[in-house]
Image 1 (tube, rainbow, N blue to C red):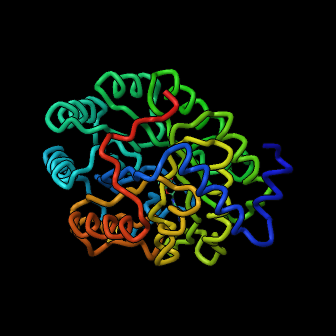
Image 2: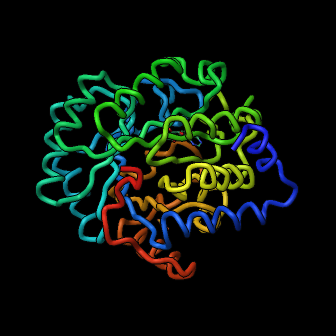
Image 3: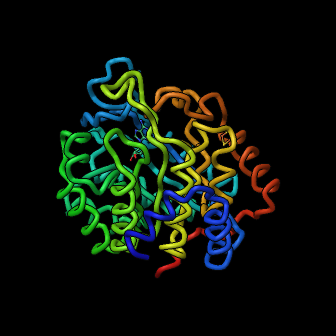
Length: 328
Ligand code: 5AD
Ligand code: FES
């Protein structure tokens, strides 16, 4: 698809035909089964100061925690008991967990529980990524957030667009299944930038693409900014499905947080993955990138019942395999 065609679709007056087309392409390329990835938010400590994020180091109002290795393993075990075939280990960027410790954690989860392991722990050196891969980590999520270098520079003071791209290239070279993505509705972001984001996703040949609306956090410098809409997020999702065909696309928590049926809508216009939270309830309220996050009071089993009911209502099934990349 050309940039002009993408722009036309993003701006179409009535998106219902776009959604139907994305739903059809999803059905043909990835089927009706939805992959469930248990999300473990194991630490909210972060050394970075991204302007949009509630966990930024300057936010003194966050009660910081870091789960112990045994506690993380117990959460992964809980995910396995709920039937999930894969877990996502996510945290702020911090040095509390030496890479060797994460490596042994990964080995333990792989050996004892036979789960696919996805890491979402930010920018590391090539050597660190290599060690994590050698330990058995299957996948890595690192959103590029925006393909506009200017926007990126203004939002992420401790990183650079160039470094982000370098990290994504390393992850690819090292044999990870690579996930990336963006926020929709960032201050200063235009529809043209989103078209370029989609072209970049295509060029990077991503295995997974996670997108969500930007939700302004009152504890950040972007309090008072206008957030992203579900409408534009769903349009973007639908175009990504049409362009990438068989990438794994989650109906994200942020979509469910700005609209009570946001994730359901996403599953009907391109999404084929859900990431139910398996973080112990006591930590959930401290892991708020944005306000209004869903599932804060829920237990892992509650989220399982919620998503399985959701899928049943939509006439979709739960995938029984780990949901590896369909591009391999
Ligand atoms: N609103 C929506 N999404 C956010 N993220 C971080 N802060 C926000 C926010 N305020 C997203 C980023 C990050 C992912 C883990 O969460 O895209 O990569
Ligand atoms: Fe957590 Fe619905 S997914 S309660």
